[in-house]
Every structure is written in structure tokens, then in C-alpha cells.
Image 1: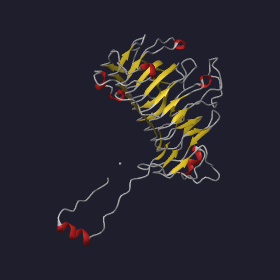
Image 2 (image 1 turned 90 degrees about the vertical axis):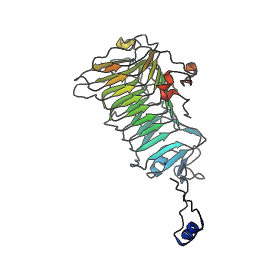
Image 3 (image 1 turned 180 degrees about the horizontal axis):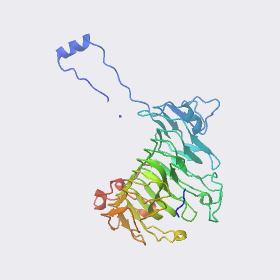
Image 4 (image 1 turned 90 degrees about the horizontal axis):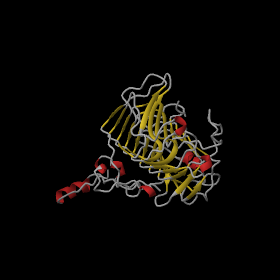
Length: 368
């Protein structure tokens, strides 16, 4: 059984007549480009005396988040925020068309360390290095002798949240656990994870996944590079995501590329997995699974409308894997000519035939 775990409008008045009309009419409004940052935090700032300005920044990400209004961006100056003992709990929501964004100051790179928990909705985390190493998962996994404590994943519990152009990893091997967790405590509908690198997580059997999609409708996971997790899947869809789209990702050296499944009473349906490249799956010996691209497993009624198609599967010892209620078609087995897989540059050169299909691998991801 699987583990549960932006219009600048320019008016050109041509000719004297138009000029005379303009002189008698209302003055044209001058538009200003919106500043990329409305509030700031810095490792040298203060949560007690800071005002969130560039000159007097806050110290913590949580204080920065509390000061933001919908439609504003809070920017982190270069440096490190948090430790393995830090909980970064984001609870201040944006609204449709007016998101709250937390990002690095343009031209700088902030390193966020600890357990990041996004309970807010309409929140974007962008251009951050996130070392998710933390000590907040303190129980031994049932039926294992795996160590504890280990890291809680970056969890997304709100709706309409976005992770983009982030670099997520767990730098402390003894604390590695799940990477990104979506919808662990209820639906995380319309979550988007894109243009990101997620890597170097996991240590326990087949329990730890690079991305664990538990619940949520209409989740989108695309144009990401995922690597190095021999203790789980690139993306686990279990037990009740619906209508997810997972496409244009590279998954390299995971235990298995994907799994789709459910528990009794749960529905896993309408999920589509396509245009991904899955390479060098390592296998999950604790579940007697060879290194394969995907399998499905149901504790309840088998899911419907799930598909796995137009993916490229290369050097997976177990092949595609066994599917019982997932439609699989048009998958290939070509060797992907990555620019440098050893250095985790999974871009495909212009001449590659695979590039036309796997558009998400056409250029190097510009994460921090």
C-alpha cells in the first residue's frame, strides 16, 4: 500500500487639428510602471522596528507577509532566512487579480531555510532558493525503522497558489523527507508549480516524493526539472486529486516516475500526465517495484479518465510499468540529448526531435 502521505496606451495626435482638440480636452493620464517590490525584508532588518521599506526592512518572511496587501509584492534581500528549526507559516491571502507575491529582490538571491507552509490563497512564491531541511516531522513512519525527526515538505494548503522559478532542495541528508506537498489537509485547488527545480529529497523506503499531490482539483505541474529521490516518485497523485495536468517535466533518478492511486472512498479521476521525460528510474525495493515510469494502484474504486501519453521513457529498468485503469498511448523510448544531465541541465538542443514535444526543456530554467 502506498504511503499517505500585464496597457500602456499611447495616443498619437497627428496634425494641427488633433493638437487643437488635445489642448481643449482633458490631459492625458501619465502611466507609471508598477514597482516590483512594495515591501522588503533583510537578514539585517528588524521585525520590531522595521517598517518594511528598503531603508528599514523587516527581518522575517512571516512579518513581511503580514504587511502585504493584495496586489503587493514583498521582496527579500540577499541572505539566509530561517534555520532547520524555523516554521515559515504564510497565512495572508491575496484575491483574484491581486495576488500576494514573495520573491527575491530583482538581481539578488534569497535563501529560505526551514518548513514553509502556505495556508494562504492567491499567493506566489517566486525566484527563491528554498532549503526545505527542517525538524518538524517527528514521528517514525508506520511499519518502518526510518529515522525521525525529518523534514516536513513545503506544504500548499490554500487555493490558487503558485510556485514559480524556485529552486527547492533539502541540504541535510539525515533530515530529508517529502519535497512539495499539495493538499494534505483538504483541497488545494488550482495550485500551479512551474519553471522550478526540485531535487535532493527523500530517504525513507518509498515514502518520500519530489512532489506529493494528495488532494486538489485542476492542479497544474509543468516545465519543472525534478531529480535525485530514490525513495519515492517524481510526482505521486494519491489519494484524491482530480483533473490535474502534469506535463513538460523532466524526472531523473527518482525511484519511479509517477503513481496514480486512491484509498477506499476516495476519487482519483480526470488526471492527465503527458509530454514528460522520465529517465533512469532507480526502483523502490521496499515495494518490490523496479525502476519504471508509472503504475496505478487502487484501494477503492479504480479511477476514471486518467491518462499517460506522449511521454518519453528512457533507461527505466522496469519499462513503462503496469497500468490497470489508466489509458496509456503514444509514449516513446528515445534517448533524450540533454545538454548536460550530469550537471542537471536538462535543456534539449535545437536540433532535437524531442524538443518539439517537450517544450519545457528547451532552455535552461532561470531559477536562482
